[in-house]
Amino acid sequence: MAKLLFEELGGRYERQGDYLIPCLSVPAEEEQPIGIWGQRHMNYLKQYHKVTYTNLLTNGRLNAYLVDVDRHRNALKGS
Image (cartoon, rainbow, N blue to C red; front, side, top):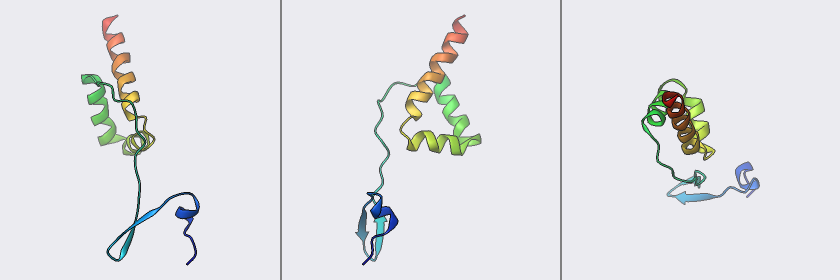
């Protein structure tokens, strides 16, 4: 049986019944507490910018991005 492109690129499948399901995982990222402004921005991204939210999530950069948004907002608020 010929290898599928996903397998040639290093991916693997898991058989579940009659189906082959790709084994996918999101890269691990350092967990940092997200403040209120980061949480609000996350909800905004989910609702109005789904592609950006999904890209950040699947690249493992969502948490760091939201923490940065929160820090930036708090810095503006404090000045």
